[in-house]
Image 1 (cartoon, rainbow, N blue to C red):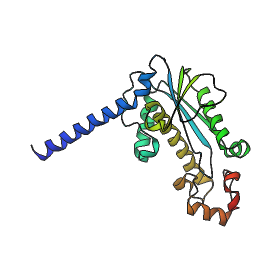
Image 2 (image 1 turned 90 degrees about the vertical axis):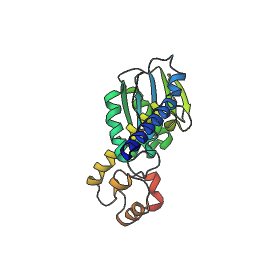
Image 3 (image 1 turned 180 degrees about the vertical axis):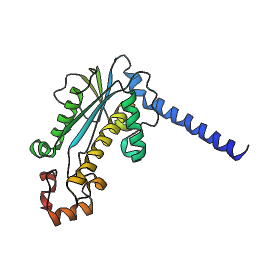
Image 4 (image 1 turned 60 degrees about the vertical axis):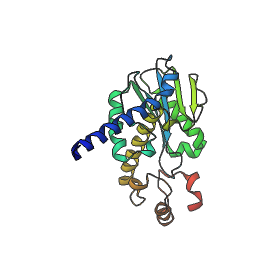
Length: 218
């Protein structure tokens, strides 16, 4: 076998491996296949010092053929961006919900996360019949819910929601970087890095900082 043939064989083997992994990623969707519109829900941004918490609700079609879906934290930025485009191209419906830093300070991060999730569900153009959630049960939602621990690494629908939420929030933080220079929001996405904390101590806080998160640094 030539080196070229070996490379091709490895490529094919890798692709087959990924197809098998994705088959497993659709196990929850298969388990609940009696439901017509299965919606995955996830959020991004519970931990940062600045910016909103962003939730996404994604309904994938029954014959979905997207490969490489995974927990957004396990993917490179380039891969997330590519998958984001493919998800938007192929999904049956996508909803985005956010809760601002002011809402987070007012009602706490957990309640703000639930609010963002409910908003994401309400923005869907197709009504979901069942929700696959990453670990949580969302209050005040009448649709059947299935909380899945580490769901973004186990369910294709939740993984898709994780990617959409992550890319959406990261793009926002890059835009905020130009509006509020000095905090390196494009780099740290609002998380409490050492450099970010030093900047807060040096130049104070800006409009998008969560006061309840940074009060000990002010």
